[in-house]
Length: 174
Length: 95
Image (cartoon, rainbow over all chains, first blue to last red; front, side, top):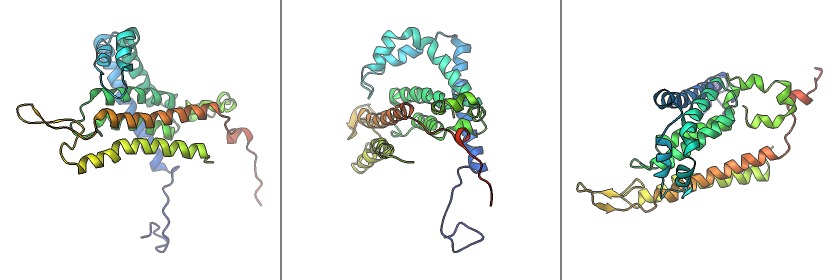
């Protein structure tokens, strides 16, 4: 089967990554994923300020997971960081993704959050692939594609002389 | 340009993630109920069937795959990068 209307005999297929539709969709995916986390974070701030007590409690319950005793230890000893950190970082990660600034760095943060949600929720009643894993995959996708370059401010920031002189920043931007 | 390290990182991380989700998932599905990695209970709440692989093992494999990706990202950060096109680019005169 040919994908070329002008040449029915051609059998090559190209999905142009620089194409308009792809850029549009990657940009949309990034903004919606950002809104998801921004909403989760900002509503926690509205409800309980920077004192999200459920955060450490959630970590303390993560016994017997693939992460071993690490989250339990964190819940017991890093409550001072987790209580303000969860609402604050969720909000910042969401904002960063929506505007497309430091997108890859923010996506790493989102991946860490979603890993804890996926492993810790431990529902799995409908299988291992649940909405938490899909959320995790969304963040990894944003990270791998450098989604901030598509209608995001990272596209502009990466063209500045500062970033040109420091090309490694593209692993945090983009 | 794809290097041996790129290929190794992709193969290892992809292999671990796919093994945890698809590979063991397929074995578990073929082994019969429960089809999800949680114990099957009857109406009285008694466990009547255990999953072949616990969620700890399968999520652990996926996490190991993600860890390989993270280490790969760290390696990319630590190694020299090619300059951007704009910094070293030159104009080519058309014929």
